[in-house]
Image (cartoon, rainbow, N blue to C red; front, side):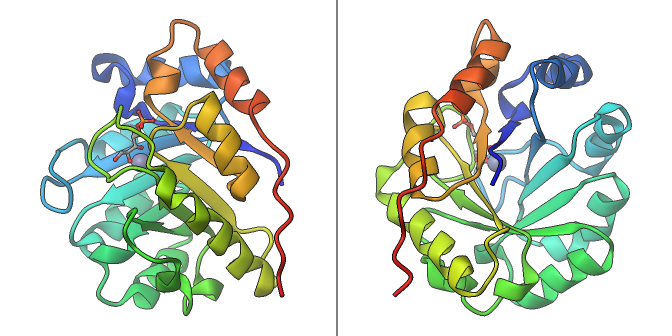
Length: 227
Ligand code: DX5
Ligand code: ZN
């Protein structure tokens, strides 16, 4: 599977998001990751659907929208109309996860599920057919610039194995939090194919080099036994 680099605009300059996205696109970003926070599911507030709508008008690459909100069902139409490509909800925020994922697909969007570091991979066991992307949080969500939690790495392999066994090798397995060239090597070896990175890209003086360094860090996937 091709490696996807998705810069997170959480670490970009919010006073000029349009040009920050153009800068990432010029530096060969594959997707743009957009963090939506409600001050309830996570202890921070960011942006909502109106901002996503403005960004989608100028962005050339897919918008990977990560909803860190308590009641995602109330806003799915808004984020779909705003031009999201992927809409990812947190398993911990969905009382009826399968219904939510089916809803996202029914409005023409790709459906993602995010798992907090302490949430086990079994949360996905009965929605395997309903998801296009799994977002494995490698920090507790809410802020950029946090330290990668290495304890989560076996979960990446467990999820990759779960989807391989189900005959879904094309599932996107994304990682988010503390991703830099060093941790990128670890997570790609474990089975991730989408790298979300905020501070290691936008915090760099040369974002072209930062993205190239992440791509260069891709490690061959560790052979996973499916027995
Ligand atoms: C954190 C967000 C991330 C954040 C990652 O809750 O979901 O997307 O931007 O930032 P870094 O890459 O700085 O850890
Ligand atoms: Zn995110």
